[in-house]
Image: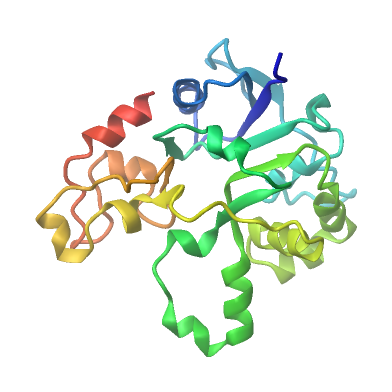
Length: 259
């Protein structure tokens, strides 16, 4: 029998609730036929579907006197995470929509894969004024969707815990630090472009064209993300964030979101 793979997500605080977890669980169940376990690390398991394995949030392990938990997601790189060491896991953020088969995310050969953050945005020509910064930002992975072997990249967390203050001073967000560590160890690989798409930049017709036609799903898309603004909740409320961005009819996305 094929060993189950893991789907991991995290929920803490009040921004997301149990129904957000349950929706993602239904989406995955609909789009992943192979044996899998759906794990949610959370500080509040109330209302979460019984099919979800709700586990306590993993300890980040900050040194004594350090209370900054903004980079809590790096706890996923604990060597002993949930007793899952050695298992293949796909991490999914809660603010995304699965729209097609997830099997390819597990079948793609390689040790570690993540979204190239730049793939979710339109080109930024002004960034080229600082070539070094531009090269770094082009290398950064968006940690909304990544696959790894649990315990195989504990060096990321180790590097952070060695000097949390320096890490947060040197990098704006945790995915920048995470990407730099992966690149340093030769493990930074990206999903094929088009598997993970931006709703705003890949689905909605650009600028005033959004008033002429509704959003559509690109042919190769498997996951829709809401990078930047509008956020997922804004989209489903019909808010485009800019006057020139009409959301239009998104019945196809709403159906996929409900799972």
